[in-house]
Length: 317
Image (cartoon, rainbow, N blue to C red; front, side, top):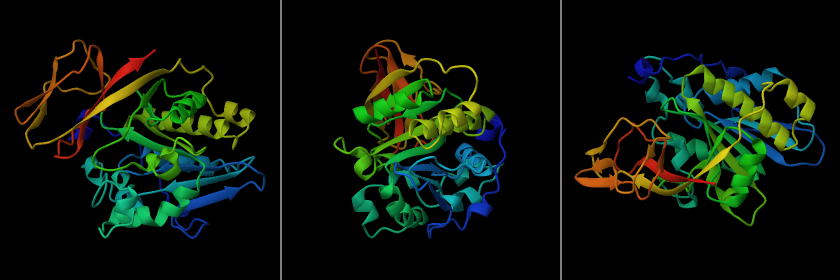
């Protein structure tokens, strides 16, 4: 089990105090400064077993933080999955029926399909659509350095640089299995000023992921103008963050058969040295590096047909 390879170092916070919210939507709370500025949205628990975001939002609530301009909304997304979290089987609470972060296509949201995740996505959809700037806090299966997923557009890359952490920025298109929340609507429109980021803070249950979630949250609030520079400085590590580097995803490997297997137990950010070197085998079809120094982004353990196995990228100078 994953918790044998990665011990659970974090405790799930009790978020029941935030259940009622104040916008007519469970687990959604807005603070309006009364001054002009963007509507800034921070989301956690898109996946119920990724608890670092819940820890970060719980911490911010307990600071009694209020935005100095614009409006700030804090949203816990898949709370029902989170409630089912069991440290003895921690992967089981990623979702209840389907992945909340693959249902954000308009055709899916407006279509006839029903699931617990789709019902919640339809509930929070107007709130997500109303936001000008979004930070969606996640974590990863493997203990690899944190990643900022900024999407395929230049505006996302620019936004990631403004936040300044984590050190690795990944520019990618998402997943064949369905659209992510960070790509929904105007967030994915290059002509719109709306912008979004998805941060993968580290391994799901390591202490460092909670530290990164809080650091990224504070820097996001400062970059969007919701927090003052002085407030942010008081809640950030003293050391300056390392210089960032950008990895551009050139293709996504989607699993086609039930016999998909990696050639090695990759964890992420490995470099495949030569074009044509093997990465995986998908039911007899080899998956090969498309170029020298190909970087593997977030190889999965969830080897299900139709799911993303790994993203392949190259570092951009």
